[in-house]
Amino acid sequence: MSANENAYLVLHGWQNHRPKDHWQHWLADRLTGLGHHVTYPQLPDPDDPDLEVWLGELARHLDGLPGGGERVVLAHSASAVLWLHAVARGTKGLDVDRVLLVAPPSGSVLLRYPEVAAFAPPPLDGLTLPGPTRLVAGDDDPYCPEGVQAVFGDPLGITAEIVPGAAHLDLDAGYGSWPAVLEWCLDPSGRFTARPRA
Image 1: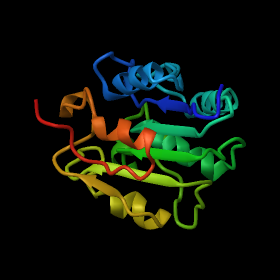
Image 2 (image 1 turned 120 degrees about the vertical axis):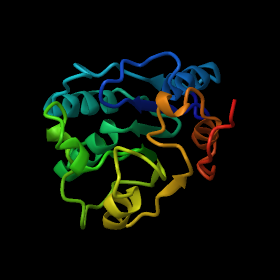
Image 3 (image 1 turned 90 degrees about the horizontal axis):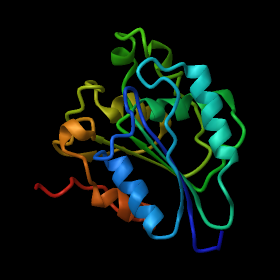
Image 4 (image 1 turned 90 degrees about the vertical axis):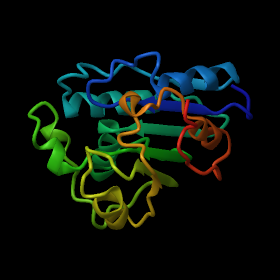
């Protein structure tokens, strides 16, 4: 892998079977087409995920990321809180160059569903993130009704970037493509904006 190629690890959320129309699939295709290394795994049992299994998969895929360029993680929904669990446990290999946490669900919502109750976020106050981290969410995300800044941004000491009307930033919200996330992948100073209306 040459120095101008980055390595991206794209992680999906609960009940996500990597549909080809989802922005993560769209993003993986475009980054691959630009010559970057992209790992976009189907995590085991997405409808009834096991936190310990997913933590093991995260560690395995991080270990498999090639060096040379930037190593970048993009995690949506349940995988965003998966990342926070890994940080809280001191999992090795989290020292990547950039992380994007998209639409993490709050504990109050996750605890309503036995399948993902174990994913409820660990204590976040005082948690030190291992590298530059951006946090982005919709201002009307039904999976984080308390607001992402209050639940995640404030305790982590980072300012969430809010996308108006983006809900959970998923297919149901119209996020089959999302040019802003591709721009951020290619330029870390990129801003997160809503996708253009069709």
